[in-house]
Image (cartoon, rainbow, N blue to C red; front, side):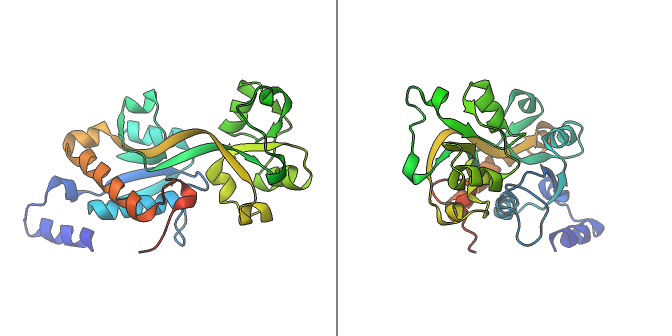
Length: 247
């Protein structure tokens, strides 16, 4: 409806503010469970972005791309105005501005109730048998820091089986949201585990510096909208598993 109204105004010669003359072009990677192409229900990240744009009252269009490299390239080359959900780094800061955090991606240890070990205790790194999912940053982190890694699992289901059923590992280490939203094991569904957060990384929206040069007030308005949406649609954990989708 908004796009149609803008078209009518342009045809009759009425001036339209630049902020609303063209939709904001956003791209996002296929990054399950945070973002993926789905109409019903929207992925958690897509849901929050939609609510933020509604709060901003800004028309936007979003398109899925294969990965973060492509998302950054589209913004760098002017094919998109921004991308989400992203973490901050120096390369991205050169061409875009990072918003206030929307969600936090926790890297967590998951233990069985009957065999909790303190990850900060002396000897944990060398004696505790741990594992993660192949191809993930969490697995790379374990190997980089010389933990006692037992294999690499293809998915959360295999990891949960190794931890809860076969008891071949003492702890699973991965993105907390990936673990908690995977309804693949009774212990995960019922919350029968102990979680210890190792580190927390903020996820936000990157907006192109070229776009902001044309819309200098946009980032301030965006950050205010993020704050309002967080208060309404997220619990105090500010994580994907804490989304409340009520109107």
